[in-house]
Length: 285
Image (tube, rainbow, N blue to C red; front, side):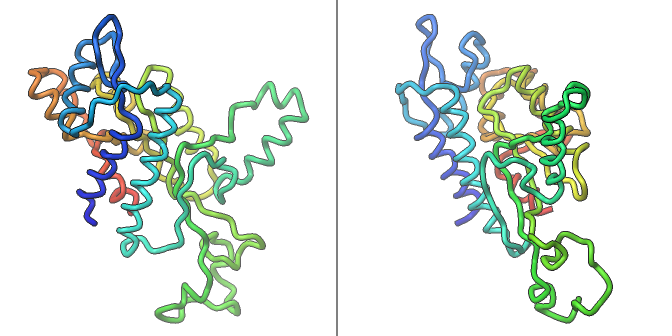
């Protein structure tokens, strides 16, 4: 199966499990649009029509939509990243709602959190939500020396070298997973959600010991200025990925929303916004 086919399958799952039609003041709109924003409603309809989603009128709560978006996105990433395994070999793990303290770069935070809980002065000074729980994580297990030496002799237990790297299984009494990517899923974007995503990203950057994981966000938000609130700027998120970027571009263009279309193009050309189909390739890097 190709990436294009997996992308289509991803959209079919979203249409079946998540997208439904809501009504406000007698006006119908897809549930990832802002019901009080005319442009948001029209752009969303354009995306829905291009994806070929059926008109589903069942009621889905915002929390349910968000949870399902995480699940469907994780399924897509697992299927697509496994297709590229020859470019990034390893024993990979894909999961949702895992604390970062489960991973090599952040396991010290569990100890810090425990110490802070028992010291009020430290708690008031340092309490900062260190133990982030990303929506989706991709991680890998350390490798055995046998695997490292698979093609040629690279390392031996007799050698007094490479004794600290977490990639070698023998260097830890208990092998610890290495966090490769932290993926934030936002069905829609509001100002507070954009800020929360950035804060989590900065915590991942500042509190790590070792290699920084990929830090990205995936969203279905249809409104360009809200996408910009998360996508613009550098230093926290690697990039923002839209679940249907090409359909979003076509929708804004056909509606004659030139400013919105140009804003999206600016984010794309600035390497701050990409399509969901780009993400598995970027994760290989």
